[in-house]
Length: 368
Image 1 (spheres, helix red, strand yellow):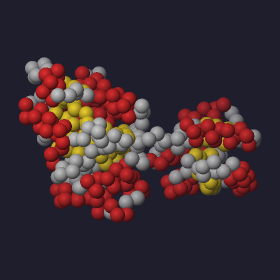
Image 2 (cartoon, one colour; image 1 turned 45 degrees about the vertical axis):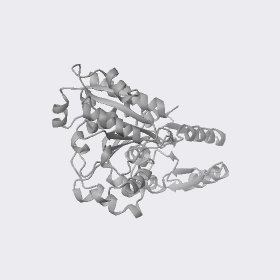
Image 3 (cartoon, rainbow, N blue to C red; image 1 turned 90 degrees about the vertical axis):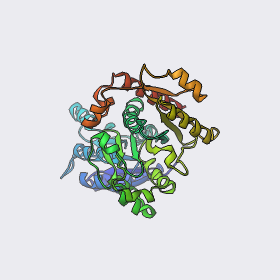
Image 4 (tube, helix red, strand yellow; image 1 turned 135 degrees about the vertical axis):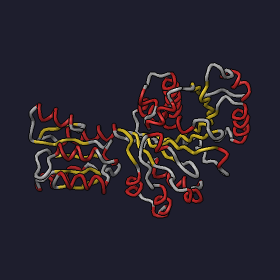
């Protein structure tokens, strides 16, 4: 059996010893916490695979400890099983509502306990994280608007955690589109790439809404020199351990000497174009430069209106099929001014439906 790690939280020393014996015999690593507060710290530092949580403890009971754990990046999907002498229905209901995954009443048979643990560990087995890199075929094609709304749609479609990485050079502006304050997160990250660790990365991420995280971009053009392919690769290693989907706003494709394309085993790449002739011609040149055997390269038509050339004619000029067509939306300027993505403001707009369709196609393609 693999050495998965279980955190046993209980202030009863005798029970701790008994659980330690049972779980080690079953092949698990065991760590202990004697209080609710200590359990929160242990989740952060030890990163267990599952928690057995007592309910009645001094200083912080199991319900409150679970609430604190769920606020941690390490604790959002962590299986938590209450193991308590309180067997009332009300206690069990409260435990589940407070974020627990299961509630077992003491005393419990060893076989039942191990079966429940194994079941939750199997259910919690991490899905493979996938990368979605989004480029603009040129400047001003609405790529940032699209990637911000796509993050929200992917979260809804997949129910996976989504991390949005702002990698626009020389300056990022995703924070503005999300209505978040600009913070100097990227500069300290770039300065410590050689010692990049999960706590540092987690401290610099911002939570936009439940299940959606954001790594702010550059707010000082001096960062641009360090924002190379090697630096991004190092950051993505940390990012892909934090979320089911990682979206990268990579700016304009032509701004890269070596564009950070996701390989077919990693994810997909989206190139955003508009109906203007110059955008179409630039996209044709970009598509020819991408090795179709190594990269899934999707073309997305953005800001399309009935007065423009039809998507079918755009496809004819491109010589390939579009993977999505997003209509021009007059409310976009207001959404940017308010710092609230259109998808969050009105999920039933034609714009939002088109973005949801792209998110669905991505999710289906990456979970086959």
